[in-house]
Image (tube, rainbow, N blue to C red; front, side):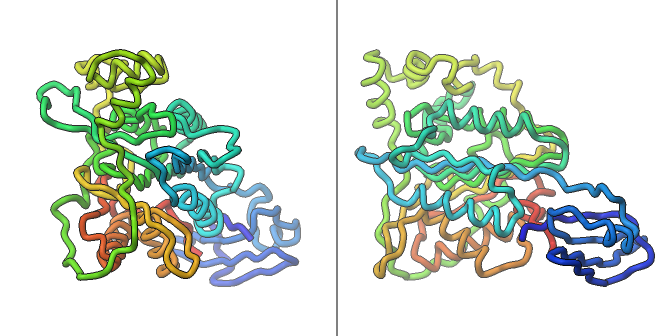
Length: 372
């Protein structure tokens, strides 16, 4: 059964459970005569509504929406193996544990036969549509598992700095500026949590505050590491591929992206750098980034373990392990810290997940998991 949480005023019944047919309603009194009730999504029968003295039309809670993207790049030199498994596993957890309706979870993969591929334009379109539907209190989630890359910064005064981007299946890069713009579009009171299991993903929301980053360390262990591949495509390979598409002789990646993808290219290349101030962070904003590694590190794509295990992303798998071991609520900071510990125990000593968000969201519950 799927549950929702209802809060309202109720004075006559405390800490009681009402069962009628397949409907179960548990009442827990809180201070100031506030109750917390847990019930199925099916309508309450009139007799039960009458007994509880609750309104016949109950607030069904805010929306929970997700976009899950897994890119394996099949039959290419950049092929990975665990990314689609990562997002399929996450969809199951979202529905069973976090109260997401399966119809509000959009899955984009490059598996053979996929109707909608995870191209740069399709990913941004799905994220934009999700944000357009959002209202105050809604919980939005984006899980990306695939390649990431570092690109030369175009920001004034950062000539030798590199910026972060993810690599959709068509190489139409989605950059830190794009994610900043998406976060800034959120309606007040809605949150967007991004879990990016990709290389160089630390700092993927431009200007977001670092909560757990390079300065947070965990004692290393001498542990055998499972066979794995880095989820990174070097910038030189990105440039070579785009050059083959445009036939333009230039090392400026933005020129290639604009030539081939036009208005679907990243905002980083469609706007002059001086206009990026339009995308300053809100203080505080409601963007939450759980990155698979630091900006200067790679994330691992793990091969199947002996005994028939499935391929998976090391960070995505670590998150799944933590959630299985802890059924109760976890803050964003707790989840990232525990995922770091899992990776260290597995021998991934050069992969350090990070957390970027406001101080308030660092201690907020991951995906606002309902209390049951």
